[in-house]
Image (tube, rainbow, N blue to C red; front, side, top):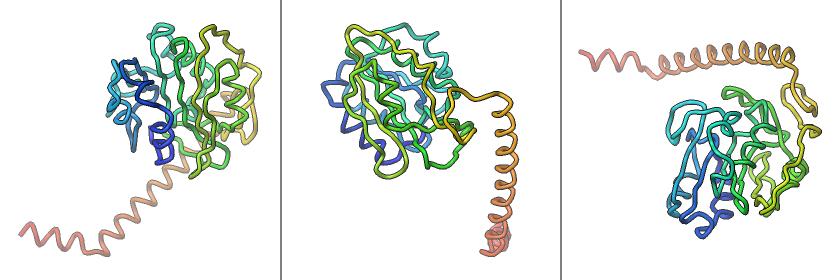
Length: 234
């Protein structure tokens, strides 16, 4: 996933060497598109670092959806669970959060960064949700919240929370989040509504891509690219 500077700063500030060194770390949504906490965390000498994402790529060790992590990873397997800029992109966010909580060891840490209301649609490939401070406080009311703050650069939210030694998972079924798909707070997204939304945005992005490509071609022609290229081939 893509991390901005404040996302990276939050992780480096809130994950200390003694929390990382010799510990087992898992990152859910680990494909490094443009910035990742992995380099910092690995510099603190963890015993193990596993990156999980839906496709092969830089920073990905295991290919798996975030919804299926709980199926392939045993409960209470990792000391730290990291997820940066993923949560807005998963349709079943409640399942993903439950997976994180279960694979985290007692007294272990979950660190999440994600986007809040006001951040634009960025469907890579999907974009569903926006999280606020009060949402995260409710979602992790069964954990000890160690740090919960807004992204100072862009609409977003950061949280670090510790799993209690005696953990009783909160039922999240009653929680509503703002969805960019419905432009309202909902518990879930109707498949028909989602299908129409995706169809509309897919056509918009294809048009944008065509316009962008035309613009690039015009710029190349204006800059004399083809004239220079021909002269180099002679």
